[in-house]
Image (cartoon, rainbow, N blue to C red):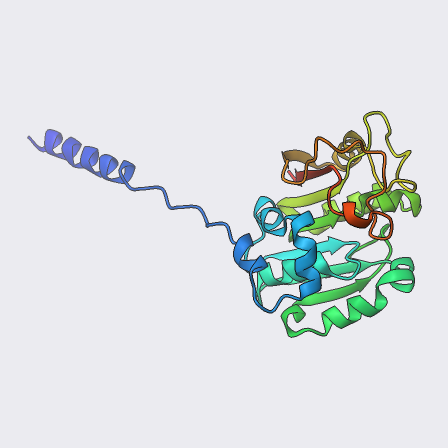
Length: 252
């Protein structure tokens, strides 16, 4: 009689474990980050064309993460990252000397002085070597609407992507968002229209060892003829309406 009783006990234990519900996934937090009442009016004006809540959720930015942004500019995305990772996280915001001197020094410095950005580490570095030595085991690195600029600025993109790969932990995310160029354009439009062909970016990033994990369409615009410049100084009323690809690469 002991063997059947023992078998029944094991069976009940297995069934009990199997019946436990799967813990729910972390709920999306992007909307709460974007809705923070202390965000500036200037930042909020960009939201409609950037869809920041969807961006944060797609790349899985969560409290406590260590992340970075390449080509931070004036810091619109960097501040969103800082809010999303919270005081227990860290954000590295990189800008080149050229960008700082020509466009970003004043708005970038003013943004970093805000208390909400206390967890941001300023990284004044070139794209070829974009992150400081302590930026290791990162959860995510984003480059938003800037990858095309690294081409006409003459950056060594192979070195840049290799540096991102080295800085990320295993399973870490490399997120690339940019203006989409016409099929076959490659890098031809990077300076004139500030666009780059999606498959060109995929090929370059995968060559560094990354795997394309997913893409998103929340910034797609099928009606965009992709023959105009969506840079802040040229787009005018059309700013934020270009067809843009959103790519999530993962370090194996």
